[in-house]
Length: 75
Image (cartoon, rainbow, N blue to C red; front, side):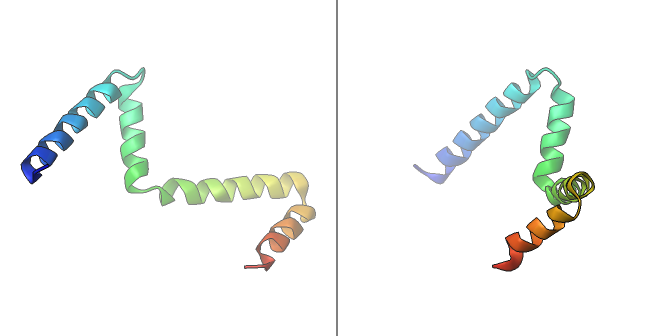
C-alpha cells in the first residue's frame, strides 16, 4: 500500500468515526469527554484515584492504609 492510499484510508475511517460519534445519543457530551480524556487523561485519573482512596479510607479506616502499605511494600 502506498502512502497516498494509506492517508486516504485513514481519512475515510476518520469520517466514519465522526459520523458514528454524531449519531450517539448525546454527541456533544461524548465528543467533549472523549477529546478531553484523550488529551489529558491524568486530569481525570489522578483526582479519581484520590477520591476513591479518600472514600475507602473513610469507610474502612486504618486497615485500608495497612492494606495499601502491604500492597506496595514489595515494589
